[in-house]
Image (tube, rainbow, N blue to C red):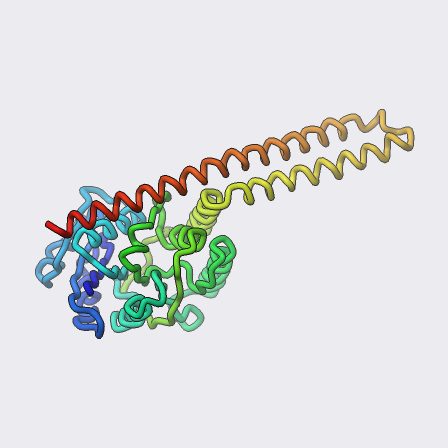
Amino acid sequence: MKLIIQIPCYNEEETLEIALNDLPKKIAGIDEIEYLIINDGSKDNTVEVAQKWGIHHVVSFKRNKGLAKGFMAGLDACLRQGADIIVNTDADNQYCGADIEKLVRPIIEGKTDIVIGERPIADTEHFSPLKKKLQKLGSWVVRKASKSDIPDAPSGFRAYSRDAAMQMNVANEYTYTLETIVQAGRNKIAMESVPVRTNPELRESRLFSSMFGYIKKSVLTILRAFMMYKPLRFFTLLGGIFFVVGLIIGGRFLIFFLNGTGRGHIQSLILASTMLMIGFQTVIVGLQADLISANRKLLEDVQYRVRKMDYEQENKK
């Protein structure tokens, strides 16, 4: 069984070697361990540091494309190199490398296909109280959207079986962490979480420039993923809100009308009609989106089969 550990990198020359030195060299049940970096348009000596250390594979972008694009490019490269299990970790040595054994163990034993490391967020000193609460709230929202029980959704420390990796698709350009959980949950891919340790902070996070930006991008990512995989439910709930508001306003007008004072409340009738029409049209949009979602599922199945044949052919060479 072959494990490839991938590390997305963007100007990581100062911390990359520390992270690489922390990675395991042997794991029981794993025959071969290789290491891969995704050079996301780095302007420093990241690649040179990795090559000097002895990294096996390098995927390079000419310009910075973001964490999500890098993650997917890494998965593709790992699969083409014959990986049976793929682990994703960070170049800033945020996660304890020895805990990779915890991540891959359930996959080795055939219990699951995706394992996500649960960080001790409450005990992480460099996380502010606000960030801790937001991480907890975000994970709760993702659990509801994905119908999963993953306690630490933003964690980038995770392992994928070969089969699960071939089913992954990331549409947003911000991050893969939230969307892939929603996708896996909705597609009923076996997924679980294990507690992992973290190391002291070596540098500040580059994923977001402000807390507001982090909240906005995270909310949009979750909503987009939920709309893609459960569009009818999303638009029905949204349309239902407009419909109920329209009924309330219409009921109010009806009361005035029956009391003989409806002439002065014609604007309420117009507003009620508008709300009811918006609600109805939103539900229609939901039905159309549901058909598109069903088509997306068929395309994902086709893509999975094509990927499987492509990677199997690649590994026979």
